Amino acid sequence: MAALVRFVGEGAVEHAARSRSRTRWQHQIATEEGTWPGLMCDLAETTAMTVIDTHIGRRLQGTIVAVGSDFVTVATTAGGHVVLAIAAISAIHLGPGARGPVGRASTENHTTLRELLAELAVEKPTLTWHLTDRTSITGQLVGVSRGFVHLRVDGTPSSTSYLPVGDHTMVALDG
Image (cartoon, rainbow, N blue to C red; front, side):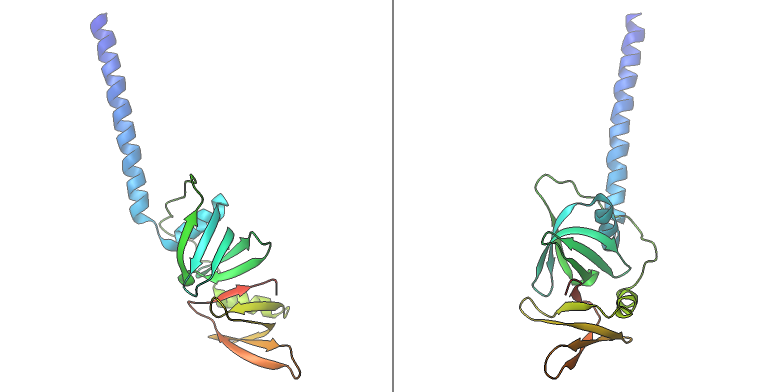
């Protein structure tokens, strides 16, 4: 009987070790297969509080709430919403002790940044287009072309600015 108990006990220990090894291996594979856009989708699903550094020198604090094929929308801690080209993100930081996702291998086909802006242009909203960490233009989105937008800027007289839609696009939707 003692031999049977020892045999069953050794089998349970061996099974637990194999299970831990399999779990580590699956996590390693998921990490290696993860993509940057897939990470954005995972962060949106977890609603993790993030700090996002951008290539234009601005830093956002908030939660990724939507993901397109080439952009994310961030609900900022200041209460606004910012649309940011994924290529404009230089780093994402999670809070201390927060466990982040590894990023899924692929993402669904989502709306592009240009398509989103074209949909917004129907309503002609006022938005702020961030050019650098210190420079921005606020105006009414009046049109979207293939590679740029038309922004009507208030003033006497009003003027029109043409801004490229691309890898450094960062737009505050709350004017």
